[in-house]
Length: 331
Image (tube, rainbow, N blue to C red; front, side, top):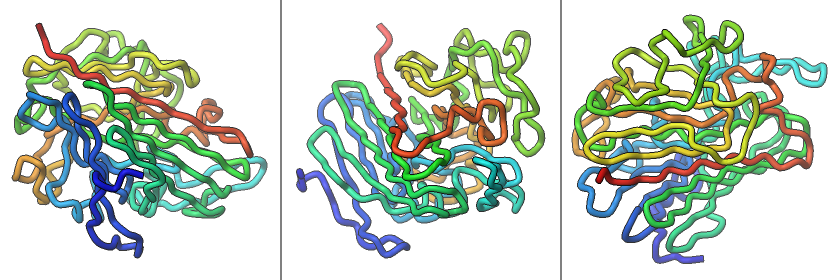
């Protein structure tokens, strides 16, 4: 294991060693933290601003209400009433959002745990985390892996899992993107390759089947600014696919193309980022809409919906999610 790119930062709140890992050279460089397997920083050579939001001080990730850069799970997004039935048994999981529902795996989900560096090199790092049966109320002892790797101007995030029992798994990267370093993303244009989206109620729980994006504020089939509030799942496929383009984000002569295997892409405009007064990578706290989160994942509330199979993990079977971020400059 390459130690020269690993820095010991101290001890995390859970008593585990807290480390920072730097990967990449030339084209794209990234800094990853073991706490939450968080992507703290991502920079493109020759480009002044970092292209993701991150806290300047690593210890800020111990209290990360906006989930900046973290890997969220074991089930990303929301589960209505923090409850689901699996194999005839009702499971009550941690209701960490307003005491009503589960969000991103509960208050001690994967974003609030120390992952372990399993292997690292100059252009990659693999982190591991084991969750016990019953953790946050979820069934099944599960072994998780997160691998970040760079090649040229591309970052790949590979998430895998294996369980000893029937359970649900839906990890997701919760990075926020800002390509220019501007105070907000009003100068950015987003394109999402999806014909439908999921309407939600005031709890952000899906109200039914996917609806067409045509003639709605959620039509991003052609690149345009994010002018209306959005915190919705865009339905790119009914099930996991081969790696394929899901979205592009453009600003300041830079384009980011996001490819993923995941059936959904949760798009969140960062409206509530201003709630934190923690300094970001630019030196000041982030304000509302300072970045946009593009989260590849299964569709929300999967355990209680007709699309439950998107997140179902059977004993001994591998779970795998891959996302690639490619950066190019406008000619």
